[in-house]
Structure formats: structure tokens, C-alpha cells
Image (cartoon, rainbow, N blue to C red; front, side, top):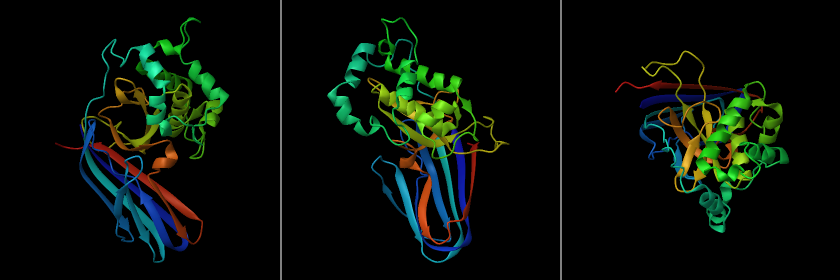
Length: 296
């Protein structure tokens, strides 16, 4: 599927500010799941951009606006061709269950995926989070979750979060951590992703936070007639399969409707736009996103 995406971030300041230094992580990956054919970023007031790849492999564009300004606008446009979701065949769950869980518990996995196994401020492994992960699959006492294949367990975990929590944009904010969302039983995609990551890490499964876009408009083309936004989901490592995507917010496999921008340990690693400036702290933020199917 060919998707065209436009993403505009605009800051309006109460008073003039200066010495604004910013980082932008709005460049889509090109990998086995998607190919980026066009991407452009523009800034007003005009400023030169320089780019680099961060520790996690995300492309970062940085810029500075030194002169005084009352408004900062960042526009990003891209055209991405995506592919269908990965669907493991019945009985093909990567390595055999016991072998896979044993490998994840070993030194090789701990060394290779250390950054995706340790808790963070957003994904702290509280006793409640650990209990939630343990309760994902209720089976006979002698057969715990470890007897499921890793992919099957992850799919069940994603489905459990989706079915037991309410999507509510008013319930949380950008600073909400997994434990808080677990108690409130409601939140947004960022919160659902953080809870799934924390639960995965509590079971020794490497997991990372993914930012991007989810196309939910008419597949026949045209713009959606509802407010759109960036999206967040999870990638977890399955021995024998590699990194696999899971969306605990929507009942869909991560595939052609998804465009990946970046990944990290949690939201803090891949904030789409962040920066600092000299001047008043009062600012109004306006973000508009449009994801539509492009004409071939």
C-alpha cells in the first residue's frame, strides 16, 4: 500500500523567544516491512538542518533558530510503500516453546538486548505489572505461560490489554507511567504500549517502543474525515522469528496500515519533536497529522 503522510507541528509563543535548539524524529524507516520513497522536512523560520542516526538507529534532524520569533512551524511530508503483516503459520511460533524461553533467560539474550530488558521510568516493573504479565494466560497450575510459544504469549498479552483497558484521551497525559495506567484501567496508545513493554520485560522478553502512523481511513483513497494523530505500538523479540510488531490498542496485525518512524526503550527515546529555547515558558502547541492512501 502506498501512503502519503503530512505532519505539522506548530508552537506559538506568548512573547518572542530565541536560541531555539530542536531535534526532529520524523523520518520513516526503510526495512523489510516498508520503503520510504519521498521525505521532506521544512522549518519556519528558515533554518539549516543537519542529520545523524542516534544510538537506536533512528534518523534525527537537528536545527537551531537563534533570532527572535513568535512562532515555530515544522512540516514533514513523506510517501511510504508498506507491505502486508507478518503472519506466522499455525504451529510456527519460532523456536519450540521451552527452547525459546530458555534462550531468553540465558546470558546471550541478556547481553544482546540489555537496553530492551531493563525497566525505565515509563516501564517500571512494579509487583502489579508483574502480576498482570503472569495472569495473561490462565491455565492448569502445572502449565504456566512459559509453556506457550513466545509469539503466542505476546499475542495473548496484546489482546488482553486491548480488551481490558479503555481508550480514553482524557485519562492520562504524556508523563503517565505503566503502573499508573494499570491502576486507572484506561489511557491512550502510548500508555498501552508502555504497559505491554513493562509486562514483556518482566517475563524476560526484549521489547521496544515504536512510534509512527496508523492508517485507518478509507482504503479506497482520500483523506479521513476525523482527527488523526501519531501512533505507538510495540516490537518484541521472538527467538527464531526476530522482532515482531504488536498493537495493544487496535485489533490489527502490524502490517501495511502501519508506518514506522522509530523505536527506543520508551517514549522518551523517540519524542517526534523536542527542543529548548530562551524566553517565555508560555507556548501553545498545535499538531496536525494526515494519513491517506496515495494514488498509484
